[in-house]
Length: 295
Image (cartoon, rainbow, N blue to C red; front, side):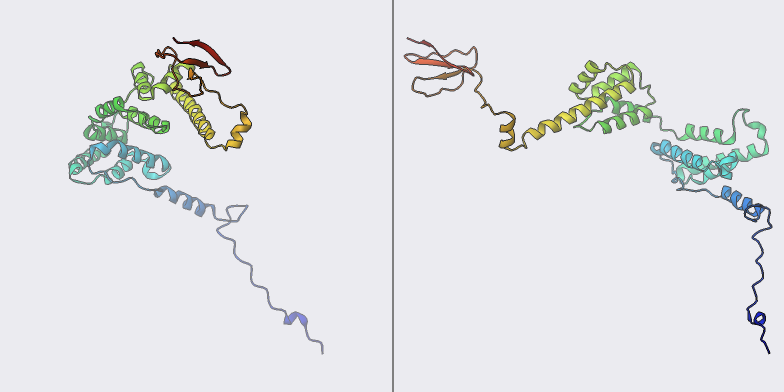
């Protein structure tokens, strides 16, 4: 009796059900579920959240810049798209005795805006108005004067031109100055080393801040190259130096010799010395000549 080989083979597992409902013809996935998962990202803020603001006016500019950068990075999030939600999140970052009263007033104002949107200007929104109110209340109005005073005292130290440029531009931004204004260009030039500023004028003749900046960077690079090149002269061996210049170095200037070969100290041109009863010889770099005898 023959045994059936078909009966001995293991049965195949049942086919698996495709993921989702098969709305996607390429992956048989559920398009609705995928869209919902994508939209869920709009509810979350990504990145490092801004630091808390406790009312220190010297940090107002830094706090606002940090907050606006964070919102720009999360511009697709729901909070960034809704001006009122953005205001609520902004107020959650304000903490401390110096800001608690302002937060209470801002919150009451926001509730009025929510109840009556006509209170908002036609070309504005709740966030723009709140940001402006915050600047009026916490702007450091003495920052501009301090920055102008620091600009007048700013000087480039050593060979660090990049540090001077970064500091000048930062202070100029805080002082709200026009960098191309002639007085500001003069302030910038006066902060450079005198030789560097003169070289920029002689070689480039800049008339704008960008031209001054480029000229200073270019001349500083040339100066640093020369500095490195000159420093290498002293590091070469005597054999290398002899290969470059095989001629012995001649004495330069006026050299007085006595007939016996004794050499007196070098006398500069125009110097006068009284010498009696001696034959003097004037030595030039390439020849020796007997000039005269003092009697």
